[in-house]
Each structure stands twice: as structure tokens, then as C-alpha cells.
Image (cartoon, rainbow, N blue to C red; front, top):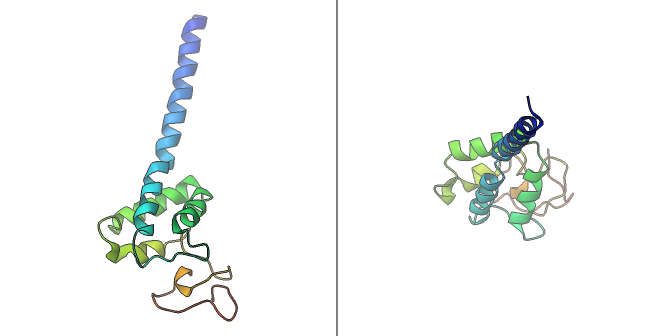
Length: 127
């Protein structure tokens, strides 16, 4: 095989790896999903008041497999069709706040219900 042919094959392999990585991660998809969730009134604003930044940070630190599972659940629950499912979609792992982590309202906490109140007296999500 000629050197030119080898270079073309390497370029194609690298290009397909980059393309498949980007599609597997679904970065644009979960960012749009975050925009949808944060536009709904039942999704917590967190202490910072910036739902979008908080959820994007949580999802970007997750593995690509976790983001894919989260996005699949988002789609399966039809979270993008109306805000009526927004809180349930927020309550998925990697977007809700885990037990023992600081919070400003209980609605942030995994397993909580809407209207549960604030995180006083401990300032952390209860078990």
C-alpha cells in the first residue's frame, strides 16, 4: 500500500472516530434537554439561581453512558413535550442532588416531592 493510501486510511479512521464520539456523547441533545427542563416552573433554580449552568455541569461531569441513559429516559418520559413531566425528568440521577449534598430547597434532592420546603436545618439533602 502506498504512503498516500495509508495517510488517507488514517485520516478516515480518525475522522470516523471523532464523528462517532460526538454522536455517542449527544452533547447538543442533552444541552437542549437542559434548556427545556430549566424553562419549566417546577424545576429547582438551585442556590445559584442558574438551573442551566448547574444541570449542564452535572451532566458534563457524567460519563457518556450515563448521559445517554439520562437522555433516553428524558425522551422515553416525553419530557420535551410539556412541563407536566419536568419535575419527574429532573429527578433522574445526575440532575437531582444526591443525599448528603448541600441544597437550598428540598425539591433539588433526589427522591423529593414538589413543595417539600427548604433544606433547613442541615442544609443538605436528607436520606
